[in-house]
Length: 494
Image 1 (cartoon, rainbow, N blue to C red):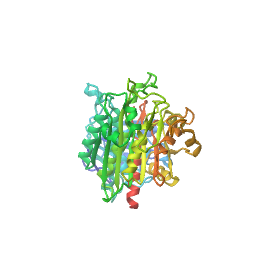
Image 2 (cartoon, rainbow, N blue to C red; image 1 turned 90 degrees about the vertical axis):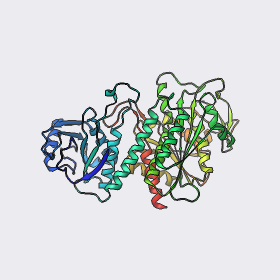
Image 3 (cartoon, one colour; image 1 turned 60 degrees about the vertical axis):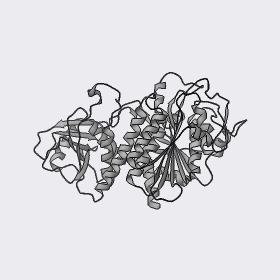
Image 4 (tube, rainbow, N blue to C red; image 1 turned 30 degrees about the vertical axis):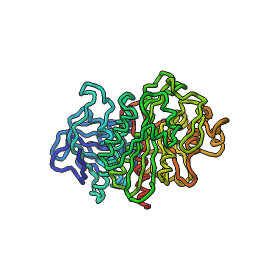
């Protein structure tokens, strides 16, 4: 699929033209003059359309017009931002799923967004729309996508940064879809070994260094907290590590640590049967950090980065960890397991310690950690924890610039005191109230003084059970965009 910019359609007719129309009937600024009136007429027929609603209107092509005009309700212009921009494009492209469109145009609004941001958003939105979750259906119709091979981005005025914006949007969009693909796979086809194989292939494609540590290597390093989660499973645990040496030299400017629980039954503290099948996506954090590393490498950002994904299943069994068991983490802190279904933090603490010992100055961990964060924030904001405050602010700003919403959560000494164990240093559960905060406090216990650290709890945002106009139900690939933007800002300061 090729992207290019243009100030107006060329002489070759497009198969479809996607036009965002704002509340009040005003079309995006890049809409060709010959199409604007038709698009606004279609919008009038929609009336007070719900945001993201697409409506297709067929017209007779004359060499400068599309045979299909896809008008997408864009809401209020003063609310139009980078997130809404890619969502509107995605909704428009998804409306073409059953079509034969191969050459499409997208009208950008550079009146509201800078041209490079509008271009990147449109590229991302197109790529996101060309992903479907029906990977294992046998009917070709169930997974059908339009044969799009060229996308013309109509900005009204040419942008000198168009090539860079297209490249960045392509790399980020493809990374997000890669993460979605991993999270979408059933647990029997996405074991820790399969994640390691996928990461190895990804590294070969993007120039990353890859290392896969087995259980013996992890045990030798003292990762007994991580390995405690793996005890009930016949699938061997894997610690997957990707490295990008963009500036050379020693140490890492940024470390990413992702929770890689390829299936979470809850262990001995077993979950209810209802919806347990969804626990295949409990490795979304691992998918996120591996995918983000690939985009950072493809962009050639001049930073040193390490991505760490501790991967295992969490199952009951004769060897499984029992509530009340005590293990020594890689940091040297002892952990009491109160609830075996609070397993994500057990693998993350060893991943975070490993990253620090590799010389990471900043650590961001990503995890579908707690249902409590979904209760607190719903499905539209990522829970953000960390220290010091300026690093938390930096990460939140990266989310805003990339079109993802992060909400800072409290983490004070009272919560740290509550996770102290009666017989060990810390315990992995302190009850249901404040559950998301206690999960963060547990990870915080192994973060060294002087290390910038942030924890992203994506449990509410990583998977949607409802189809939306701009995305099918299933994995969403969240936090990849935020991490790439954070890495870019770090690279600019280096």
